[in-house]
Length: 450
Image: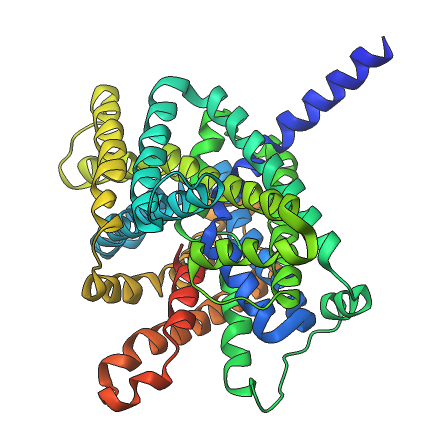
């Protein structure tokens, strides 16, 4: 009887935090892990507080999205298109398409690189990246097509289990100064030593911006619909699972900063993660290397699967809204399914091109649009959730408004630093280009916009 009661309680707990697990698993990818490790390598554990602050900022955004949806039964995309004019769809569609291409390609690449490090069966790393990357993309497609939402939830829980146990265990085993960790958590400070003073603020802001995804924060609203959370009575439940989501997101970020501060490593994105795993062989042995790689694989594959499952729903929502508002066509379930599968296949197949080619000029355009996404989302929440006639008692309180204003400033700063790093090489004489750190640019880019 006691065993049955325990099992029942565990199931009830998981049913409450299930969507939070999906948010964590989707939002934490190779870019987040790499940026946290790279920042830890440059600035040490002094900036651990920035991980906590970044997770809190993403919580504020997602909590605002959730309140809007519970109050109005509309997604935030629907609210923005219906109330803020035609500029919203004109800006959002190109961003969604470019985000899907670059992030889809980056996720497959990260899965390919990580899997090749675990199972190096191909003659070259680039070949392994392409073949394993394509394989992971197709596997994600099959799981979404055949498995449905319950299977999706179970796989994501397994992946986040790998992530949590492996990455956290690595950080605990390798950390040699827990007093410095505690100081970094509770004493906000930005290193200002002569060697890193010029970059310390930029990397601290990048660390805040790199915690927990960007466009993927919109996915939560579509998972709420799957779970039939559609009225204010579930407000506390939603806050609880979002709190769990960003608590675990912060834990991963903290663990990676600690690991990065202990091990000297070079590289970008998923390659940095693999290089880091190789360096862990010396202090932790092959078991430590494999443990970390399995956790990293869980992070990148769960991100891929979450994007494959949820982002087509964003596209469907967009198509239905535009047709309804500007073409006077009612929402059609058959068309919705057609749009969903069309985008799912496109999201899987088209970004495979990015595994073999570089699109630097398009990346710059995407970066310019992407730099504005999080600030614009904060601005939309300030505008929509401040109106009692739309959200009633769920409107922003004064402290929520202050938090959103801080989010707006923080992500505008993050976007500025990223764009400066992307645009500066275009106007720098060739003789000075060697002074610009390409690896830093790529890691910051992946952190803020993926």
